[in-house]
Length: 263
Image (cartoon, rainbow, N blue to C red):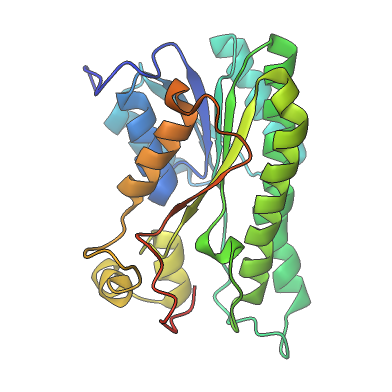
């Protein structure tokens, strides 16, 4: 990648967790195209290295990081500071979904705990350590967490996932109260249903099947894609959103709540 789409993020350093595929992968591309240096964090090492080759090693690097291990999250932030000197943007995006329906009557507690370890505890660890680095460095940074349409509604199925995304929204809104005093903005981006590898795996469908399945999930004609969410993240990371804090930005095309599809 030799030219930038714009220079709105020039000089910025960003960490993207869950950055090797799906929304994270697309956002890593978008952040780099706007001038940021991107640290891609994931547990999918081969995909992460392939993404660095695609974007260019002068614009990004890959770091193996399992967000369920706070020590790895702390090391991720510290290594970013050592190599780049500062941290301006965190896109805390790592998340999972269970491939069981998880209704409340047959609720699988171990599966719930495993999901929460990534979606909630991991998210909190990422926000904690990134915010600490920004405060210590006097950086008026931007933290964006991936919530979901599921953070604002209920569902008969996938109850643990819905719970986790409600928790993410609560984390971001609470963190924004404290960190605003340091000039650090904390916001959420909430996608509607996208046929990401994560969701397709949970549903057992192909990309084409997933897109057909969710094509009518919004009031807008067309299919919601990862690039739409990535553009929203770039906006929240940039100075164009300099007075937006504690906000949940829905990217769902106007959710068609008359539908009965699972999340």
